[in-house]
Amino acid sequence: MKMSKQDETRFRDAAIDAFRGDGDLELMLSDIGLHPRHWPARRGLSPAEGWNQALHVLADSDVDGGQLALVRRAYQDRPRNPVFSSLITRYDSPDPVDPADPVGSSEPAAAAGGVKWDFFISYTQKDRSWAEWAAWTLEKNGYRVLIQAWDFVAGSSWTNKMQDGVVHATRMIAVLSAAYIESAYGTAEWQAMFRRDPLGAERRLIPVRVEECERPGLLDATGCDLFGVEEQIAVRRLLRCAEGAVRGRLKPDLPPPFPTTSAVPAPVGFPGGT
Image (tube, rainbow, N blue to C red; front, top):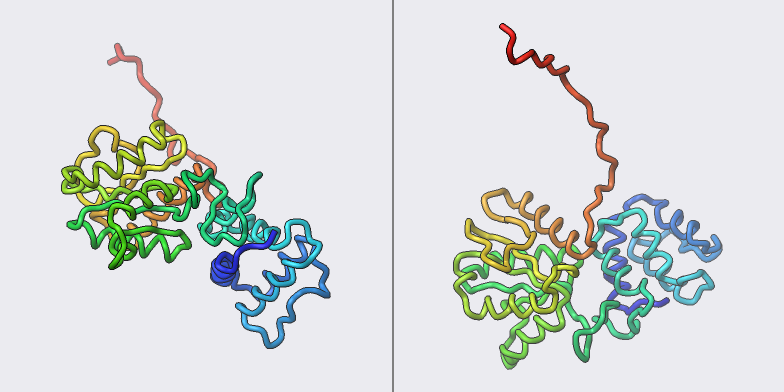
């Protein structure tokens, strides 16, 4: 399997950030069965050049899975990395996408053109700053995002773009506030996404509150709150929410500590005693 050029770049950049040890790449190449004579020479190569060369070699090698073998191996070590996870979802499936399609998906296409974005951000103009912050945070961590503030450019059709977001994004993040609840357009957007997944089995509608407000009716789905905390905490909450929606599970990387009792409870006395 050979990835698109865009996905090669996404994987390379994520791998450089995730694996900083000098021998990590060589170890993974050995694990997937690439003969040492084909490994990229470390001397004089930058990390980007090393990963690029490895992907180039794997594209034409007899290693089972080709480039995907390296993606699988990286995902094995970093299962919570959103880029590795999204590439596994996209390519490692019974019906992988055509690598020539840089925005394809292994998920069923909702219409001609298939899935183009991981998330569509639905919001009101009052909460634009929250929406842009969320979009920036998600894209920085490897997700593909459609947001009105950046993607509805001059000359484009607002109606068609909204339709594009509802139909061709895998999931919707509803930036939930009192203003959003009262918004006719916001309501139309989240209800359209809800109709695609009324039981929540595919985790398509994710309400993210940015102020104290109700979660009325069908918006009472599992989501997260970003307000009232420091930015670092909000980042962790948003990424954990996104990861859980994409993967369907949030098993920790490390085993939980063994439960212990800090103190022996006092014996319970007879109620009728003196």
